[in-house]
Length: 117
Ligand SMILES: C[S@@+](CC[C@H](N)C(=O)[O-])C[C@H]1O[C@@H](n2cnc3c(N)ncnc32)[C@H](O)[C@@H]1O
Image 1: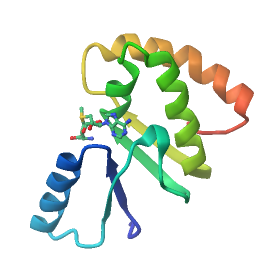
Image 2 (image 1 turned 45 degrees about the vertical axis):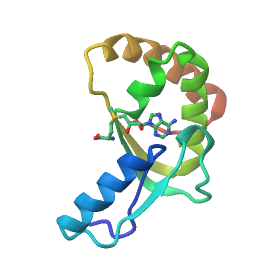
Image 3 (image 1 turned 120 degrees about the vertical axis):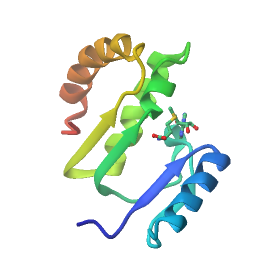
């Protein structure tokens, strides 16, 4: 059971919504932070990182390749050695993204030495 939880999004509206839902459902110990994952202000590491839909949004941007590299660099700095990253894709278009990732992640895992997945 996890007790040290942090939720982030770069949209103030999304964070406000998440704060309200957490309060409504009695999750009082989650920290929420408006933060761009590509230029994160977080200066710590996490055992588990979960992402639902953010990599879709970033990876399908016209400049997606460069942004995906920034995303994995940021995530690999945020996850503890031996930690876990779970990324959930939401849309059908993600099949294209997963194809890109399957190639890029293998390259990045070899070159960075980080065991991020
Ligand atoms: C498809 S929504 C998913 C929202 C939420 N994770 C959920 O599951 O309901 C994608 C989210 O990614 C956020 N996002 C996109 N680019 C981001 C970035 N560079 N840093 C942080 N959040 C980002 C958007 O603001 C949006 O809330």
